[in-house]
Image (cartoon, rainbow over all chains, first blue to last red; front, side):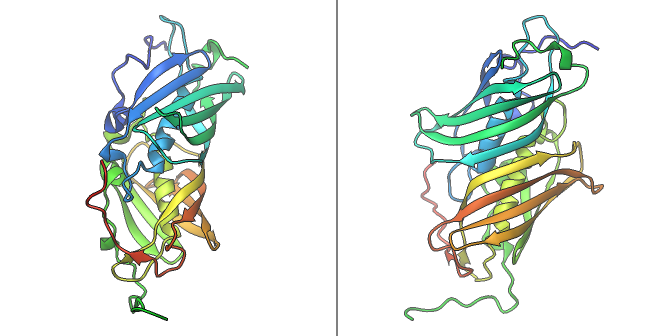
Length: 146
Length: 161
C-alpha cells in the first residue's frame, strides 16, 4: 500500500493542527520546525500558554524530524512512545518555535531532541522523545542522520 | 494572627464552579470533573478536533490532559472563593495505546507534596478501560498557593491577550 507524497509544510492541516493553528515550517532530513502564534485558545487560567500546547508543538516536531522523504516518495508515519518535557523558562514573545533534531535510532525506533523558543530567542522548554515508525513505512527513511 | 482567617467548606468540597474551563480546556472541550484531596479526574470525548494524521487522539492532547489533571491533583483547595495555582516544571508521558473514539478519562494522584513543589501521576484510559497513556509530572506552587488555603480568586479580566 503506497501513499501519495506528503509534505507537511504544504499539506492541508490535519484536524488538531487546525484546532490549535500551528504550522510545520521546516522539514528536512533529521530536522523539523513547528511554529504557532500564541492565541487565546492556547491559554490556561493564568492567561499564558498551557503546558499542553508546548507539548503538542514539541511532540509534532519530534515526529516530523524523523519522517523526511524526497518528493515523490511514499510518506512515512510515526507514533510517539514517550515524551519528556522540561519547562525551563517563561515566554518573552508571542511566537512559539519548536525545533526538533533526530539524534539516533534505527529502522523501527528513533529519538528526538526538541527545544521550544520564542522569536526573541528565549528558551521556554526542552524535550526528549522516543518515536516509533508505523509498520509498512519503516524501511524508507531518508536522511536518518546519526 | 491577623485578618480574617479563611474557613474551609464543612464537607471539604472543592467546588468545581470556582474553576472556569477557559482557554485550551475550552478549545479541546476538556473538563475537570473531580477535585478532591490528592486526586483529580478529567474527561474528554474524542472528536475530529483532537485527531492526528492517523485519525486517532493526538499525543499532544493526551499530554495536555496529563499536565492539567496532574496539576489539579495537587491543588485541592476546599475554601470557597479561594484557589491554588502552580506551574509545570517537568512532564513525562508514556504512550501505551491508541484511542480513537469515545470518552477518555484521566485520573491523577498526588505522589508527593513538598513545601514548594509536588509530583503527581496520571493514567489516561479509554472508555473500555484500555490504558492510552500515563505520565508523571512535577509542579511548583505559586507563592501563596503552598497551603490548602491558597489565595483569593482574582480572575484577571484585564489579562493580556
